[in-house]
Picture 1 (cartoon, rainbow, N blue to C red):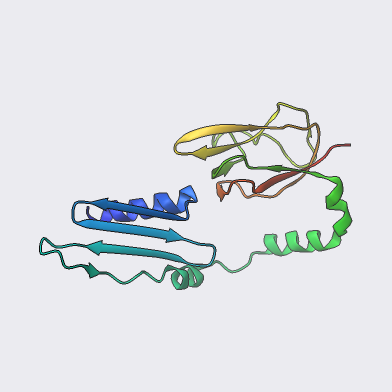
Picture 2 (cartoon, rainbow, N blue to C red; picture 1 turned 30 degrees about the vertical axis):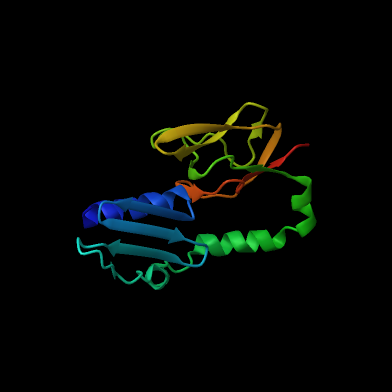
Length: 171
């Protein structure tokens, strides 16, 4: 297994949302662990003599912190809007959650318009978004009727199982 294949495997595991993956092929053992606070990759090579040599875990957390973009004005305005809304208001809304792990898309394709916008009225069965998992695009349909109040996830972002995607006002 060459370095390129290992890097592709790490990227795949990170996108899939799995917490730990172990792979043993011939004389190579790979363990990839992902967590909310840290990511660790351990690659062990077992030479024909049977003694193990361990490569150190890659400190990806520090690398990610250095590459984190500075907060944009858009995120600042979003947090101000969230502070303005009273906490009790969200309790009247229904939260549409992700039924699967994958990548969230608001559009059916890059050149098409979004499925729904804030303020749109929806009914049961309307497609709200698609979530790509393992190269399959799964349409997420509304289980409630109402009005879209807020989109909680950015387009092309990874989502977890049961992660809130939309707030819907059922009235």
